[in-house]
Amino acid sequence: PYQWPLRWSATVASKGLKFESDEVQYESRGKVMYLLDRNYKRLDMLYQSGVQRAVGQGPCETPDPSNPLACVRNQTRTSTILHRGNRMSFIDYHENGSISSCTWMDLSIIGNIRPDWFMDNRGDSTDVQYIGDSHVYYEEIGRA
Image 1 (cartoon, rainbow, N blue to C red):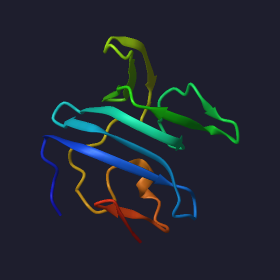
Image 2: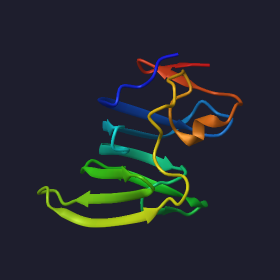
Image 3: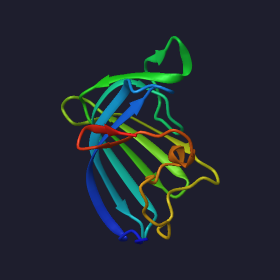
Image 4: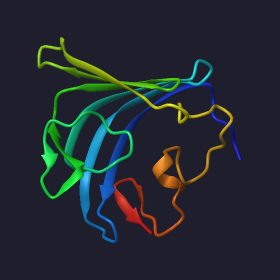
């Protein structure tokens, strides 16, 4: 196993699949930055499309009528999520780059990821801790 570097960033692309299906229901692209020595995480979302069902998702302007815990997200404007300690802030921007809204939530005891976690092929998100059927995408190709 390898321990994470204390400061790093990556361009990210994510695809969420429907339960028991290979059909993509949500995808996003952006850039994530970590300062693990300060317990900070920043995610700049540059593109979102589809129905998001996730723990700790940002405020929802367009709820999915078929599921009250899901959100329809179709946007190309930038949004930012700041995760510092147990506080998660959500910042949305106007087309001209000025801030249109800023909200936050207290994650209580959940907090941010810990710098002493080790990398593995399951990722760092709390939703990947489920040990069941899984899908892994590498270079846009699904792998079971």
